[in-house]
Length: 458
Image (cartoon, rainbow, N blue to C red; front, side, top):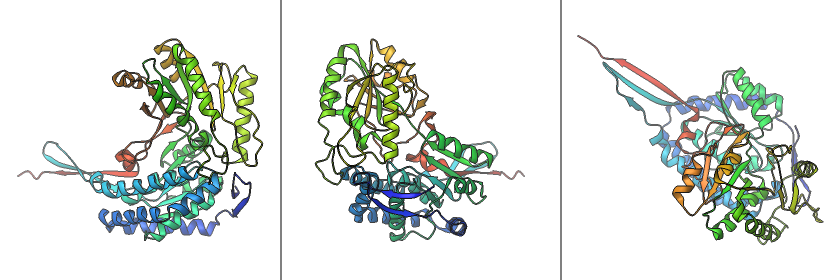
């Protein structure tokens, strides 16, 4: 696996890196193991002080971190800056709340004292994707740092510069050696690391293929794992929707991060009575997107992250059209250097179309016309995935009733996907298992150790 940093706007190769050597991997494993052992005598409050320092360091280096991400994977500079702010908040959140989350739990039982201690697991291997180079790492690193689990990072091969920058920020904040170790690994090295007894668990955010591979390796070695995989999220519009809000939320829900988000709304399910007006509004919004330099703050649609990603998306769109889908807007070549993909809207996608339940990872929206609320819910649930969804309605009780019937890990009412440190993140079905962020995320790699003490009887 080649680690190569290429600017998707200029196509300039920024840097290339060799895979980690066996000696580097061994040193990382031992350093993480030694730190995990030393942390057994370090209080949570001491680690909280360091994690707050990480948050401060992120804010101090916000511009440098943001520009590194934008140059390396192409997202808008404003989106990169927002990502840094979000990650600083994640660090502060876990620094503030981990001690509360890690408190022992007393269990009432007859004739004995029962206490569940919350203890560290050990070193965690984190395999992370390119679309949110900092955020994907921080939501694993911050809670595990507070628990006392060192993290070894295997980042995506197209964002090696971001990976190095993240580990440098953690080091500069004063975190002990081994807290976050960045390694450039190939697939065989990942499998070998999962098999190593010093690795206690593995977390992956990525493709379904990658998830199956990691889950298999973890299962074979009896290691706990979490997977956050793809999504084909439904955006369900109800007839009582606030149209002004709808026309504001829908385009952003699809096009943020150039559509390269697992939780982006990909399938817009619209009642017949609103369909034509919705389509007109969506076309206008898509047509107004300005492609250009992602470092230019007037740009509203950045290039895709790589040539490979752009070509894959084009093949999916071509396949959809070949099988009966209609292009309502877009699907024209972009006469510009860089990996740009014209925002595209597809309709008339039947369940027989091969792309009906594929994840389209880019600025392509699928719009479906339905004739009843029941049909809308059935269509939303007709998917192998179950990550997120959106329900739009001016009647919040009605929206929540519909939301509760959607088979997903997360549903957002009158709002596109959002991430806050206190909210659990994760899905069901082929979107993976486990949760990140929130108390649930922190508890993922915690040993809940029961101490049962029988009372002395005279």
